[in-house]
Length: 320
Image (cartoon, one colour):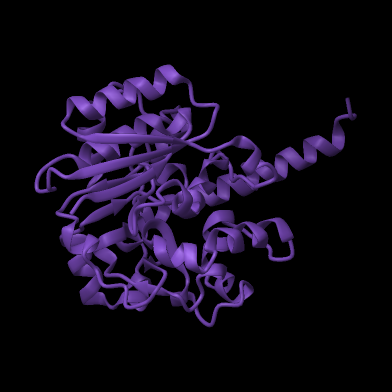
């Protein structure tokens, strides 16, 4: 049975997508793997062709799916993440002959055989996902979305999608209607919209299939999954997910993830090797030796100070 894996990226994230795909194409994966790469019209054909050649040179099969940019009009973005975050919503129509697909964010890395995940019985659920671990103080976000508890909010970086159910229940239409209605405040736009739409209709997967940064760095992850489950997931992950802000990414100078080298290894094998990590400033060189329990609060304090200074300067300087 062909393993269908989908991802989406703009030009900035193509190198990260290539690293993820390279990890996907390594043993012990079966030979029968097909990658569905979703993009908009802004992706240069030369970049697409280069990625396609890279995948085929490594024995992979890749199909490119362009989504009309008009369909993305008005959909919110988040920081550096462009509207391509929404492209997964169109997978049921882009893959009309497929009954399921595994969607992966480009900041993931495959480190074990995906067949057990691919064969998971969803037991009537519309998708399978792993519960999200919120940063301290943000657990109230689930309640703001109308969810009964934080553990009923999933992380959308790894989704085992039942495409038949999505088509039957018109899930794509529901998601887009929710976003364009604007009555629900979406902090993490795509992830929030998915959680509201699939409330009560998703199956919780073992966290090793979306082994988030939070499992390594947040003590309260044990409150979500149990201490033994967290230990097992971090010792033997199936899919690593470098979720979070800039310093959580393995291509950033301040990243302290114990399995960062996995990404660096696969990235080096792509046509876009990492020549220089992001964030290698003098200030960050001073911060890097700090342990995570001190580094995170320090960065938040620096951000608050900078924001306060920016606001004060804006009040003093005349408008242009």
